[in-house]
Length: 146
Image (spheres, helix red, strand yellow):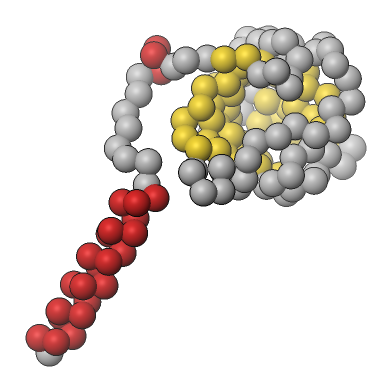
């Protein structure tokens, strides 16, 4: 019985050591302190704040925001993408169908799925982006935002 408990404790400790080597550490950030940046790959009107990049796979977690009436034309990514709307309304078009999402709603977009995004509300739209690998924007149809 004692041996089983010792083995269980050792297993938990070993797992904790592994987690501590890959976890980003405890981070708390106030929205007002976000360092919003423009992207060289997106038309003007889109900004992002990097939350975390996983060192081994380069998977990213970021906050993104579009100005009112911003449109990002059809494009795709090398990796799966999950989007969670935080503020405003986001139109996501894929397979010739648009879905408009509000705060708390999400979409999971498989790798290589061509899709377009637009700020569908009256003001700025903000959303969380989770990529399963490095962030890229491929096949962007137009260099200009609408």
